[in-house]
Length: 126
Image (cartoon, rainbow, N blue to C red; front, side, top):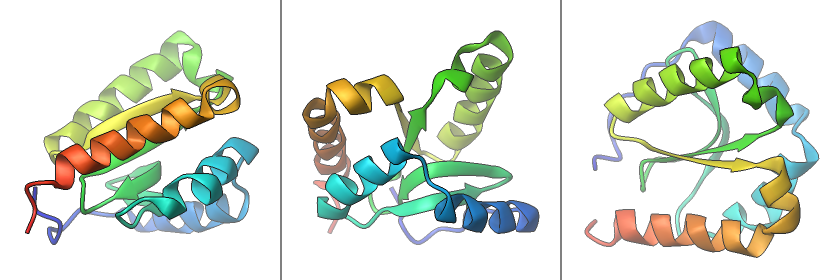
């Protein structure tokens, strides 16, 4: 898992990502301020990889975290997310998906799951 590699970024998506950072959902803010900021590795918010804007990205652990609202559950969104995950996986990235509902009802379990993945994916790093 190389942390210092190039991940292509679409310039238009960079502009959109900046807007999204200013308008995060309450679930994104909760996971950011109450979980990810306490992790042993740094995470980025609304990070661009190719033309995709991922909710959170940890380059040291090669982990992408997506917080899915209800708009992610219709057939076209599921197909889009599947293709997107395939693209991210080609870079060696692990995509972890959690629903808004999980953030509200299983917050500690979500944070523990993220932590365990971070530790597992970074333990062999120098």
